[in-house]
Image (cartoon, rainbow, N blue to C red; front, side, top):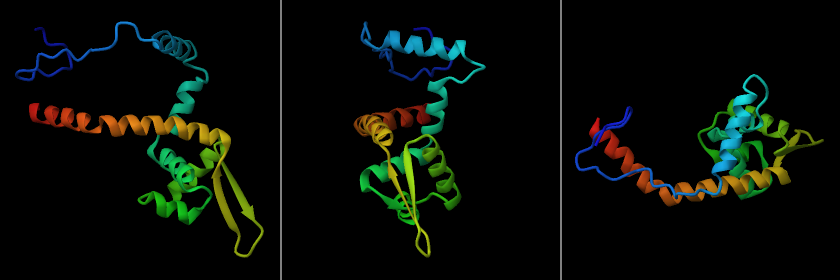
Length: 154
């Protein structure tokens, strides 16, 4: 078997890893996404722009916190997420609000009370994140085994 660039030759590993179905229903759709991305490289590519904005762990965790616990105040969300800094949570919530995924409501009290909640658009994104979380849960052990094999082969 010929070793391809970037692959490791593991002893006894003769399994073919490219086990895609011969006809993948979304293949054409993904090719179109790359076509648009490559032809608009110096312009705004909606897929790249939006994915870059929402794919960091803090955005995902903020969306999961609001989706799972409903309306939250800033410190409640900071506590739910855990190891996020105040500055990073502020930046994350501002970005999510600017994108229409989160609403920020300020109550005219002393001291001011501020609450955050998902918009319908935010709930739609949370449903997509839930699919990804389910996939990660279903495949996590297999991925960890592959990582361990990779480390042992290095």
